Length: 357
Image 1 (cartoon, rainbow, N blue to C red):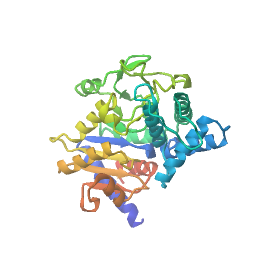
Image 2: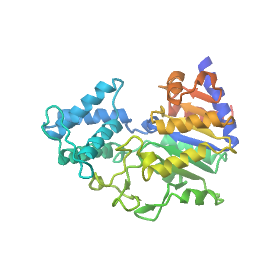
Image 3: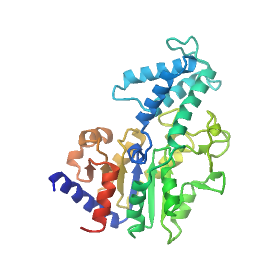
């Protein structure tokens, strides 16, 4: 057995010991959903580019081609669908009736009006919907992961934070008959009540429970109007996906700090990590800390709580990338453990070591 595998196993053994102490928080990024057959944010951008390249030339495709070209020149490592949405939303905000009607022009397009922007947003969101909602999920890795933690008797409640828009965790909870508290109440079109997280935590339950915090919103969240609370739809058809209602992590990179519902969700993430009396254990899977509002919370946890621990599962990350994102020297920080393996490999080790060798 290679030295690298033994090092990975030693770290997972240490993780299992810490899990027994409680205070585990799981953070799922796009890399965790990829194993279930969902595309990453970069892959969604590539799908969009192929669609507009192969489509009939019109103002919408010309606009999106130009946006993508600009972003690719700024991000040679690859563009994500979030970055494309963010830029389109910024332009929409500048040219909408709610602002001072600033004129924006791009090469090849004489005038970018509200119709071009509206149809561009709908075009992007249909691609996201078709590739992240209307597919058959491969659930086995997630099923095994949840069973290792909840069915083993190690935990009765698991807090999961995610920036993913998909409904993968919800699907797994249904399959395993696990209670999923997601901040909504109601039977059909459930409405937001984030206080339910605290209410659920105060109750003692023999049923395995997941608290799911979707920090960047969800594909099945809609906002009927600006003065109402968001609702979660039981069934989402593309006809529901309009510019006015779908909750996405835009137009501002910091919208989760400034506005509803993101401020409430990021506050709960921060509160969980920064409880002084706790020994927080954060397990991050398939996420590279690209969002500064999330990275800063993790950094604060590590700096302010000497009993905190961070485990990162991602084959594409290295210590330098994590150090740059978290602004700490990971090599000199024993509380940070990087396992350069994918989610499926991690779960296989977890199953093996959780049963004892």
